[in-house]
Length: 119
Length: 361
Image (cartoon, rainbow over all chains, first blue to last red; front, side, top):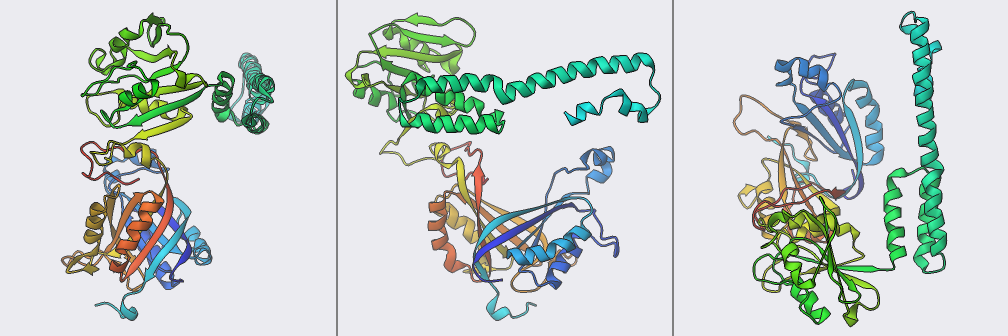
């Protein structure tokens, strides 16, 4: 990604218990790894302490499960083309949830000193 | 309409056999429903619209704004934007009355009433050291007739101007227990001759007054708002209630918990800088996984203490203040990403004193 200019913020709202059907690992892990493999500028996973979604009524019936299935938000910022190229992946992986996009202005994007790998 | 059509008995057979009687009942309620729908469609597309159009025609040629309002009315009617009808009606009302309302806003006891008394060249409004004005008071030109007080629960009452204090002040009408909704007074002051109406509002930001809510409710109705600031006190968070709501900017820093600035976490340094610069607020969000420009996937690991995780800092304020703040903190950002986006602030209220730190967005 260019260091400055127009960008798109992609947000994926899912549940912590949502799984990748293939590996059985948390879905957010798979999404982040895919984003990493496709060389997107970055991804951040945030866990919400509370929330509800389209299937809240269904979840409320199983109150014990509700307490662990917390909201997860995955945020990815990149150029519009890169985000667009990532959308089919999201479409395939996310079976239920919410995906939003908004316009952002990237003020600064700095890799760590010459991109040296971290310990 | 399509959904109602589907209620027809012919389409309902899928849910099981229907008796003659049920089918008849269904047909009856269906025709009632359709009638209501037709009425609603008429109302939305024409009905009231013509009334507004007629009123606008009467106003035609008075001022430039009329043609603009006419255009607005045309668009609202043509597109069936019912939700804007009230606003247009309000504008037409304003044009018809040929009045121009100038309202004075500000913190409690910053001298709104004394200022208006000075402009009017007479002591018409009650003044004092403690919060005084409890209800917005309108003053327009006219003979020194009695002031009129409107109540939520009974008929309006006329009273001499000297008796205004009984209804307009916090001392004699605390928390507006008399349920006053509106006070209007007419004065023969020369400054009011041109048709201007002055509005004195209860001060913002006092725990003792419920008046602030009245002021905020009135705010969008005035033609011109004057924000009065007391030179001796700084602009507090309460005064910013007026300032911050609306289109603002959301600034976000994407960092990790390990990025440091002068031997401490950068996100802490940014929050502290935001506080020092008196920004409206700052929020730190902790991520549980992610990767960034450094190109390493960070993850929560149960077996390590204090492992590196993504951190986001959010700051919301006006575009100018965000720009100024960004200039100050930019040298601190040596890795990570910074983005800006537009945010619409719906409400911004502080519970305590200014500077205690509000919440963003």
